[in-house]
Image 1: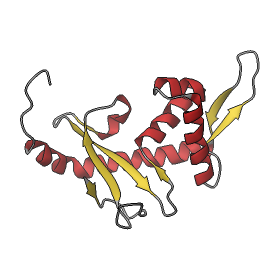
Image 2: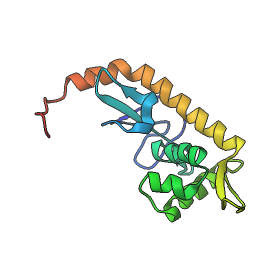
Image 3: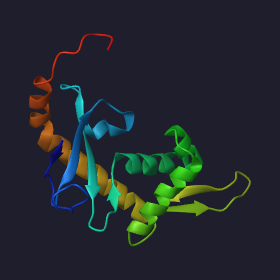
Length: 155
């Protein structure tokens, strides 16, 4: 489903100013977006003019890099290759005024990666938007969930 929540920007196949909202099953990194009472959650993707975007996958990658201190380890946790993880970080680094992730030089423990101040700021703002949307959309998600067909156990 696509719904206008914030006036951010447009993207391919979307009217200007729309953010995509998706109802789906739970993922561990989306705690702020979960609706325990409904068994549903919102997934927010912000699409900026010019085609840049940030969504749950990139935000989860940033979270994991901050926790693991490694692009490779963060990618492995998400089931993606180092190359794919680094491509996503390259995209994010190019989108914003300053890099979100920086590599650290190798030493006794090897190299790694850290979130920059800008990376922490962008991730914090994205998570705040998620939480705000979850709160604002909770009654609507509950109403939509009530309209779903009953799904037999085991399916």
